[in-house]
Amino acid sequence: MSISMNTLEAILRAFNNHDIDSIMSYFSPRGEFVMAAGPGGYGTRLVGRAAIAKALKERFEVVPDISWTDASSWICGDRAVTEWRVQGTTPTGPLDCNGCDLWHFDGDKILRKDTYYKQVINV
Image (cartoon, rainbow, N blue to C red; front, side):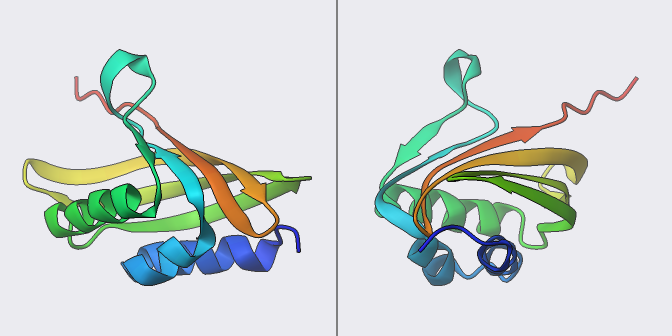
């Protein structure tokens, strides 16, 4: 089975529902999630379902109203790109920016989710 637009849409629904069990069902046991922020200019790299689930649980607790909207996706073989707008309320104020995920799949399981946000600078 290969990745489909229906699967990408289901993954987005799981993120918007903050349904960690559902999100984890889409990740390969050896899957990785590279977050938008972290050391070395590459972002924090989480490997394995347990590490990814822990980080997502913390993210959903810190930004309980986080949601991804206005999503557009493209699939090319075992890779995909999803552009989106993320919004929510952080402890330091509102989050509202555009970003994307670069996906790599093995069949219908996520091998790698690499997230990028536009950097918001208030001038």
